[in-house]
Amino acid sequence: MRHEICCDLLHSASCNHELLLLEKNSNMFEESDSSATKSPLHLAAYNGHHQALEVLLQSLVDLDIKDEKGRTALDLAAFKGHAECVEALISQGASVTVKDNVTKRTPLHASVINGHTPCLRLLLEVADNPDVTDAKGQTPLMLAVAYGHIDAVSLLLEKEASVDAADLLGCTALHRGIMTGHEECVQMLLEKEVSILCKDARGRTPLHFAAARGHATWLSELLQIALSEEDCSLKDNQGYTPLHWACYNGHENCIEVLLEQKFFRKFYGNSFSPLHCAVINDHENCASMLIGAIDASIVNCKDDKGRTPFHAAAFADHVECLQLLLSHSAQVNAVDHAGKTALMMAAQNGHVGAVDFLVNIAKADLTLRDKDLNTSLHLASSKGHEKCALLILDKIQEQSLINAKNNSLQTPLHIAARNGLKMVVEELLAKGACVLAVDENGHTPALACAPNKDVADCLALILATMMPFSPSSSMTAFNFACYKKDNLGRTHLCDGSAMGSINAYNKPLSNNIGTEDGYNENDSDSETF
Image 1 (spheres, rainbow, N blue to C red):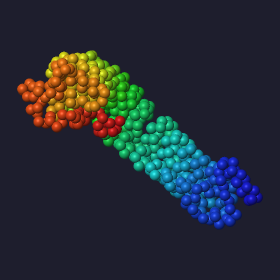
Image 2: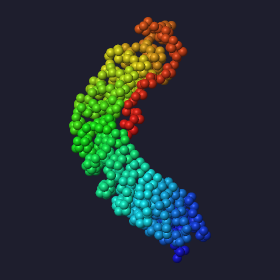
Image 3: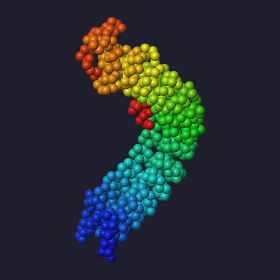
Image 4: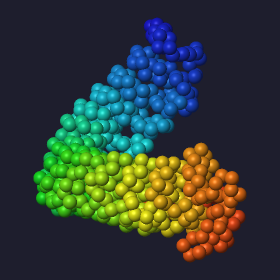
């Protein structure tokens, strides 16, 4: 009889494309080799061949032999849901607490991942601790909730599994249930009076998760409980509240729930406000809800870098949000701590739609400069955004703006030429840009050009303007540039720094241009969202 069962086992393994080697000498079963790949015991357990397994169990000494990933036969049987195999292994003394080598999970974890409640029940009968953790600090209850296995959750709660246990990231089963949206699992946890103000490693409560995921019903229920607590802290480690998260992700239903509470009808927490969060992601309706529920004055609130929601909308090129903010008297020319306006941010990021709106509709002030004395034209040109530069340039007539110099004494012509913006160079020259202006290195716009086709075209245009002589004249463009006097009566030769560097423009644009992107910095705003 035993021989027949072993033959069946061999045939089954072959059908499953597994190679099963059974040697006549039974001593091989007594060896515990932790590096074993797939032993007959593992194959029988994995495939649910409980009769073959029972035969093997009579010959084996070590039932906890591991495969190449550190999994035992009990682990595999529990993972596949083979309750008879699990029962047979447990009855012979297989350990329910052995962890694999990779995830450090036990058979308890393995059974809940696929919702194998009969296996879980057998394991819990002999397990001392239902809250055993894996490499990430996750308990079986956390996994059961995350995968939405209601029966497994119910069974674990019957066995008094901890509802408030947290993993290495501080996440509880409730965090996971809300994040994955398994309603019945969440409800079972709430009935156990789970802590709703528990915070993960980033300070986020289940309320933050509900707001971020758009679960308005849960948010409402959790909010009622939270606001009754004496110590109701709803700011995460970055100072963001559930309202910030709901606005950032555009969940209007959650915003409505939150704004019903007087507690949220004023901004607190991170100064990068819920309105900033809404407009930077183009959630116009959310922004409108905030303005209507709180006050129109919030359109000019500033974060800790001095940036308004108008800056945020321009930075992200959301024209509809710009229109909304402008209709509620947003300050078009507000500057942040770097001296940048909304137009400067849009121009620097190449947002044609926002630049067009700000220049032609909002009538943004083109004369304003940032802390490095860059105008919006400087910034657009410095990043190679030709369309934005042309939109701005179309509205400029004043020579003082055409030839405005930044801290490095660079004019827009220097920068446009350096970046090969042929059309911008043409327009600047047509508007009377000074071709002999020198920057802090004594370089003219012509010398700012780099050697490629587009920039060569720019250089030709500039040299043609600089040379009022016939082609047959012996006076070259270089000679002319050297002897041309500036407004103080000095020639280019008077500036010693020009000699020796006349053949190359090695120094890049002012390091100050483009280093204060604002929203691109690795600060709390960009880090959290």
